[in-house]
Length: 441
Image 1 (tube, one colour):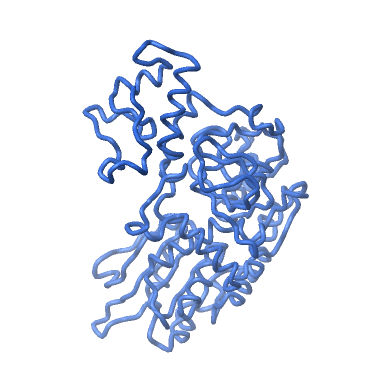
Image 2 (image 1 turned 45 degrees about the horizontal axis):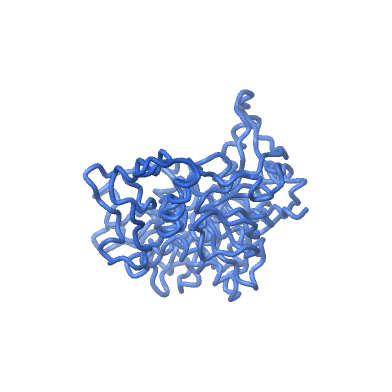
């Protein structure tokens, strides 16, 4: 079988997925026919060969076509732990059905094509997404629930590269984020070593610390939400919910030239938002939300709002609507972007006026696409604000001093005391903002 030319040398029309009548040929394989694909999968060839020679042929084809097309080879040809020369086990932070954290030992995951192995230096807690169940489990334990690992954003040094990975180097400092777990152990956990798709890593600028870079996933999530809001200079903006994503929404909206008001129950988060550019913060339940918010806008009403918390929020949504700008014919106008796991029930059309309600899904285009996560390429002329671009721009703002992540971080814990970080968040939520785990301790 004649190997195809490398992807970059093919005509542009052939760079897209090769179509066949069966549509069963993976694009990484380089095969021109279903028969060639089946021979590669079975270890044989047209001459009936199998074993090492056939695998060498398959490896050559995959290498020619790049990292994005090599990911599925992991099923047949995983790189073993012995070949990466890594320790058999390392520390990881899971949580049990009682909402209690533990330090466990786990086997270092196998490195697959299109992935990198990273020695963690810091990982960053997301209090809502990661620990929402912990609050409930401590009230209503689930004794039979298995322990589950925590975390989906971290930063560290690359120690091994999977087959086909390009654009990354051994020893490079990178921020990491999780996609969907496609094999056991994949993910940017609170663990000393993590295996993540190379497309879900981003080099860290020299002036940015591991602590700061470990929050890049949620920074990119907020950046995607701010882009969805299409803010303009001098607009009045609300951020409801001042967790880590909300904190980044405050800062990015402020950098966009907006005037920002924040709503949150907890003092530590309100203080952090004020440090990041919020001109006013209000406590729901204790203060009247609508009157001071409209006063902050000089009576004009809000141009945009971000809902950056999870759970049911019918009352909150109505309060936000009451703060939006209103036309002379009594219809509310503006944009509401939902970036948290928020749900609400409300009438539409006449009941909501002409308000645009928009969803902001995660970090932007590319997230959860196996092709992209494992090194695939989205042309920036068509997809300008991809996941990696948002990660890059988030850390560029950190490196330029335009975002100070220390304003968000309230606590740091060594990995040896990581369960205490969960206790801090659950038991003393009012005085907790961002929490970092140091994996060198």
